[in-house]
Amino acid sequence: MNAATTSPGSPAKNPTRILIVDDDENQQHLLHHWLHTMGYQVVGTLSSGAQAIAKWEQYQPDVILMDIMMEEPEAGIQAGEQIGAESSVPIIYLTATEEEGAFSRALRSNPHGYLAKPVSPAALKSAIEVSLVRHNYENQLVEYRKKLERSEQLFRGIFTNLRIGYFRITPEHRIELLNPFLIELLEVPDDESLAGQNLRDLVAPDVHPHAFLNLENQDAQETVWRSLSGKTIPVKLHIWPVTDASGEMIFLEGTVEDMTRANTLRNQMMHAQKMEVIGTLSGRVSHEINNRLTSVLGHSELIMAKVEPGTKLEKYARSVVQNARSASEIIRQLLTFTREWGEDVRAFDILHLVKNMLDLLQHVLGRGIELSAELPQESIHIKGNPKAVEQALFNIAINARDAMPDGGLFTIRIEKSFQDGNGPLSKSIPNGAYVKLSLTDTGIGMTDDVQERLFNPFFTTKDENISTGLGLSVVQRIMDQMNGHILVESAPGQGARFDLYLPLSGGK
Image 1: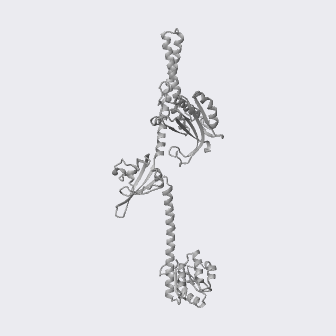
Image 2: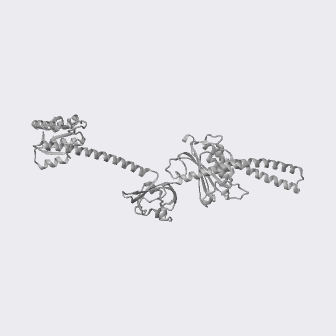
Image 3: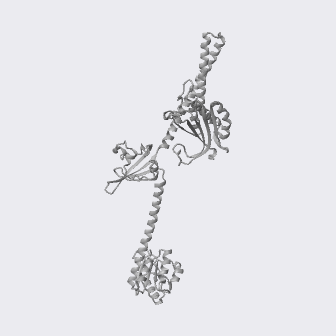
């Protein structure tokens, strides 16, 4: 606040502004004289509580000297209460009454001072200076509380909403604090508290205590934790000790990043790169072999035309032709696998495409398999190669047919899917707007081991004379080149579902 006086050599400050509220003119003059002598500035004098309520803001006082008994016995207290509700300006009560009730009522309005008349100049100056110090302290306290509240809001927002786990544990690994994301990641029931439990025993019971958190390594540590349900979670840890002034460790803090999605995307990228290399190599080899096979097939057919039917030579030539044609079919599939599906990219209605393929797909599936289509009414446009989508549907339909040798049901379902990073697929599919093409069969299903290798080129569970193991590899390659994603859900005896996620055209 403004000081009443200045020390020699210090810059001049504006004098403290005082408003006098008293209905006694003699008292007004006396107070005015004393305040002026002390170096304060009297900005005005008012003679009633009502005037004080109506006009005090006009004077912009630093301190108000308020008589309690004016037009009413407690007019000053009433005025002080109303002014105090609107402002924090210091109010010092002046009163000639010795009634304890009035004193108690005055204190309830939280004044900055209380002086009994007659007032001495020394007591007046002391009360004013104390009120200014208190007012300044209270303002600082209010500002500190605001900053503290903002800081708490910031921490609370980060602690609550950050999609990275945070923990605080004792040096013995006892849990003190977990943020909501880590509680969710560890699948902690709503009615259960982990406070006081050993974090290592919960998430990594097989790890030696000394190896659980490596404080010597300042870099991020990638490891595997276990949720309360037993599910393994790949995580990245950042850990640091918090010490007191003597350097003794008080507790450990750390962040936990769920690496499931990052690992999935990394594996997808590695798989795509592997497929790219295999595709490039297969394409070159296929063209070379195809040229040779064309020559073998042509000359074998010429031999068959020159020799007598039924002879051994004709039989050998026929066998060469049959095997050459079989090899040509394998080469054709290899060329399909190596094809760049990024050509002829355009926006098209996938609903229209699927409807036009239903008859062909029923023919591929055969009579023993029922085809069901659950299609929306509205058109859904995606951007890509229509022939590539047809090929993907065709290959999955063949896979479904082979999985249902005794007949069954093959279902096609189309719907929009919007991923915002919060759903169950957030770790597998990037944010965006997609069309979800679900292809479900009621076949023999697949084991986890088969699903892990399902899209590897040349992998097949069928007779090698029946399948080359390239059909689903082609589907994976198509999805990669169209910026799509494919998820598989299956179990032995439970059939299989292939979910193809393709980006909507324009994100709509």
